[in-house]
Figure: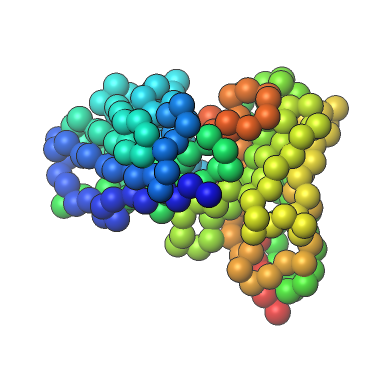
Length: 107
Length: 122
């Protein structure tokens, strides 16, 4: 079983700042089968990134994903007010698992 | 409009059963694998089960294998989750979610429903 550890647990930033979120896997994720989701309070998750670096339809280009093997990163180049939310990574190379989430909050 | 709409949640006693439904619209349902993901109050996401577009292959998380059964009726564009032997720890919002393709494994989810709340309590 691949365990995904997201860090930090909470990221306090101001609008316009750059956000860097980490997702570390306990073993290598086959073929970079890693996705990122955004969830706002009271809403369902929304797919942002799949295949580690491919933006889903409708994902703004300020969101970018990178990484391979065991280390993956979601970067938001300049935070907009609507980007303050919780972000989850998910590996889908075998049995599906989500990370514990990173909350991006307004500083 | 492309959407998923869950129903069937509610209050159930420990040891009881519940069947969740997820009605799909706006896309060719049988072409896509589907899954169920839950979220306990204040907690993260927890994948439970998935099924291929044809319904021929299913997979389960260890936490629910043997208690939960996923199925689908492609003629009704509906996904189901039969939940038996429910425990307090099963209390969560249950989401159905669509995979971008219909095959086995390698599932991530590009469309989610709004969720239905299941509360297991005496």
